Figure 1 (cartoon, rainbow, N blue to C red):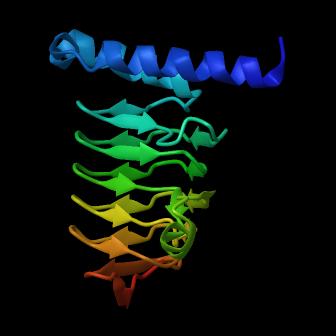
Figure 2: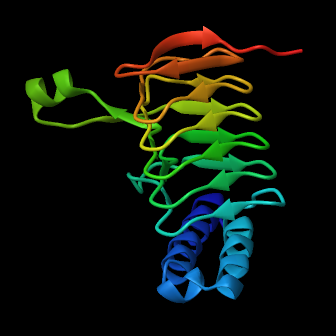
Length: 182
């Protein structure tokens, strides 16, 4: 089987699997464990993954072969969108709280206005180990790295890279302080 066809089947399996585990039956205690297990298999995530209700891990533009890697002991709360049209890597012990949107593609608006064609460009994002992303955060494609043990405050819109051991907040997100570390 060609790599392109294999990738297409993998994506179809992921889409059907996610639709299945989004049903209300998987909000029951026994269903939660099965949901986490299914997401681990679908996305080859590390052990200890927890995925809340209405989490969409998807490629917004199906014609691109994006990638996603999820580490161990990752907590993804409910109503989260993880876009891997580009490339998304989530380290170990990362927390992503409810309502967060993470995007790995962008559109060239100038090209759209000039030609009427809306080109999509893939981007990459690495979320390092022990990062904490608060509620209703938006991480835009212009951000390529969230540093180790970085904290992103609730409601922030992240437009640029976040350094290790840094707290950022606001719209757009700005550094509030450097966090103590060993």
